Length: 198
Image 1 (cartoon, rainbow, N blue to C red):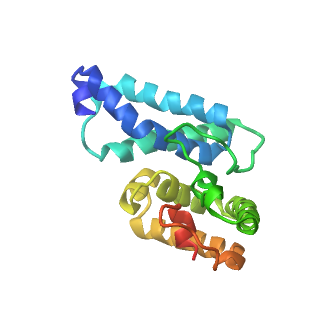
Image 2: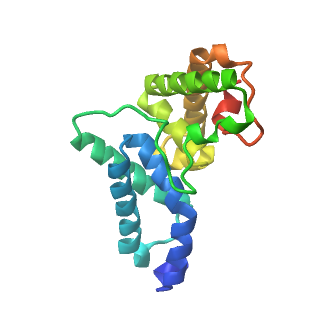
Image 3: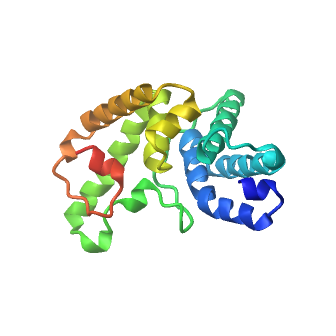
């Protein structure tokens, strides 16, 4: 970011390649509307461009970036009357794999397992929708965007222990909703969400 602030456009391309997909996924999970998430994601990076010359490394870049994204999402939610339910069925670009895409490959599992997987997806979708906003936000930042607890705490302006507590409660709730799937086998490559819920 400091290089981009000095006028190096190649540095912005590197930032964009590194952070665009995770920021988009975070926004998509926050507002659950693909078109609006694309617009807000673009707005995040437009704001980054606008303030590039004034950026100082007081906080980690990802913390600063996700703070911008979070604030835009909050503003958007305030303006939006209708809430759209979280969808795991959204298709994405190469680097934008949804949780549904990370579940076991249907070519490698039996038909009965495929039915279990589809049912698991529906139950997970329902379970995520039941989480309080604070817990869903922490879960999304941690599992879909890959932020560390410290970074999430900085973005949310709460203590790291608060973030860990919200994550723990989110996982407990999800485990409760998905207890029937505790014996369902996931491959090592599958999402960390499924691994956490075991």
